[in-house]
Image 1 (cartoon, one colour):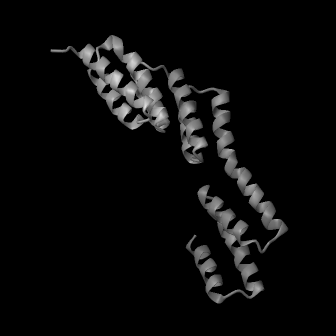
Image 2 (cartoon, helix red, strand yellow):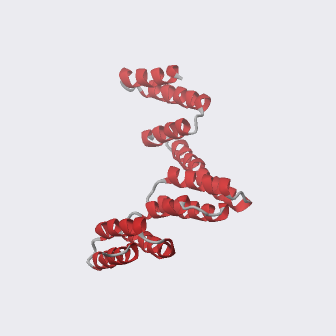
Image 3 (cartoon, one colour):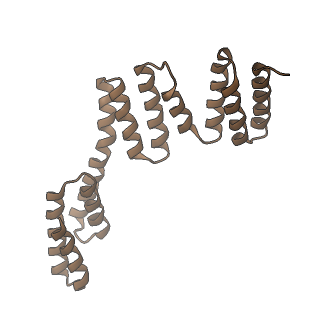
Length: 193
């Protein structure tokens, strides 16, 4: 009969072999089982191996979330992990998720730098809006810029500005002689606000 230490070591060896073969998903399963049964003094090493394997398997966000939820993590340590998560999400193109993670980091360990990072990511919407407004000023008939500005105004819940924007769009459409259905749709959206 084998003890929990030897069984956890066997599972780690299986995971190492799976990692060498490139089967990271199977290695994750073995390491999760090893972590469950391992004695307390072996858990830290297994947890590090599991985090590394999760990252290799393309599940880096899960590894960071595990670290955030680990018992005994200081507020500063959690904030650092939230910042790592923000980086992962930003690299993946999830700007909202990155902003949420940075907001949580700033909440856990409030500092000027942490709050500045939150404002930088929030500011990316303002920068996008400014760029689209410049495009629309240079070409008032650019429908892509017009719709992008509408979406950005909705995203920041600026309904008064949105109503004005839709009114200007309706005026442009009426002057250009566009189909009445398109003009009616814009007017209905404005009326709904």
